[in-house]
Image 1: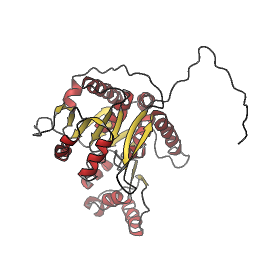
Image 2: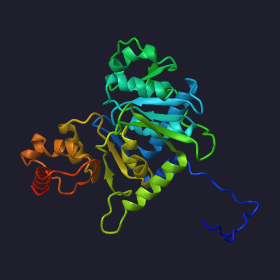
Image 3: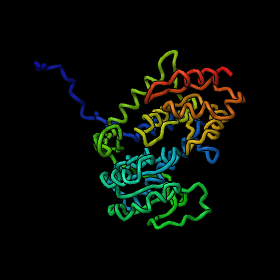
Image 4: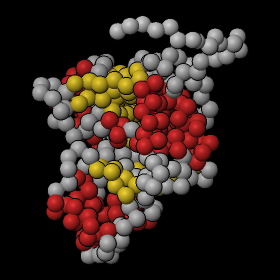
Length: 331
């Protein structure tokens, strides 16, 4: 390959070359969102401004627990507002977010957490029993932060819990002085199971995630087929541990869209949120789409999903599934 010598514009003394950081996506989204909200099931909703404050409070919480730049923090949770906050707070303090695939076998979950060198774990109460027999095999983990749906109920566990997510967040300031660092720093980590042998770790840097988000935002705003903007309501039905739910939560945040997180995937709850929150856009694999369109309330033609757009990936829809979607959207 021949070399070339393009003309370069010298930088002025006052010029800066700002790095591409995940925190910039959050800042832009808060400015864009207006009165839009982050919704979790039928349990909570708050503004983008409050979302930003909670990210800052989570950063304080993690720092108090000794999490520092370069540390790997694992999360085992359903799709939630907490998960979205982890998408930002953990990388923004310079740590690495490990999105654990909760659908793996216990021995594979142990393998990924040990291989990742996780030092701290955020865990939903539904997955406590899964981690209890693994704790002694994860000597690097210094503590577990519990996520509860109803904090008035106690959880009996042998895990060395440092506290409950909402309780610890509520004790923290709403401003955190996030550090600046290289945009090529690792931000997230997940493990792919699409290969033979043990799961393989895949890293993403801040720069990679920002570029992916910008590209996805452009694609989702194609003229005549606009899927996502600040006036849309978005709900993922792709697990957030699966490649950041295809990166769409980052894109939805950048654009300031209303975001709805359904928690555990239950057909009735998904349909309830689709209808009550007037969801415009989701994404999922065919199995989950079929679960939604086969729900009793939809099969009985009590609701109309004709305004709901769905991006399907992973595999092609079967002919029967396509027909079911057509019937449900035209009822």
